[in-house]
Length: 210
Ligand code: GRF
Image 1 (spheres, rainbow, N blue to C red):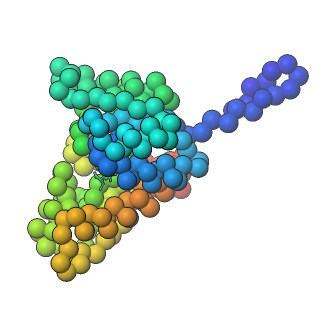
Image 2: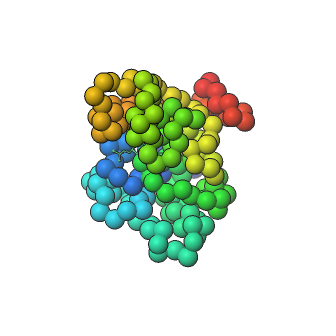
């Protein structure tokens, strides 16, 4: 964008603005921050007080906010409050990096931007909050990560990118999750960069990288 002022012109470089939602240790948030070249993280919202994700954001000088579902009359009010907070800080993309709450329709209507999530399994296998444990208990040899566009369902949105991770003999939920997280820390920032570059096109359930 360029704004003309007097005789000269002042170029305004607006970076792609990403709002991150996180409930946990924030290792994915850290990876997103470390890779933030073509985009910037404008806010970090959590639903859990005292989590490391909030500390990481504060240390990086990013505005943080805490919204607890129990402080709102219902999920719609909770979802709308989060949307408003993110919009207040500038939002071109919303990214769930280990955010463990489902947001309802008012969130999607209010933000009006894509909302992406990193899930620790190869969807549609093993949706839900215990994906790593469920894959291990099932006995699969390969699992992985899926970066999806969120819709109102639980892990039901269109798949943007996936990376496979082999299950090793003797894996525990923790060891397997850590290897999946290593893949997520590469893949999620890559996907955000694709959005920032305008290279993601969605046609129904098919997501094309241009
Ligand atoms: C990731 O595995 C993500 O897929 C899942 O929660 C984890 C977040 O990890 N939903 P961290 O809190 O960023 O370390």
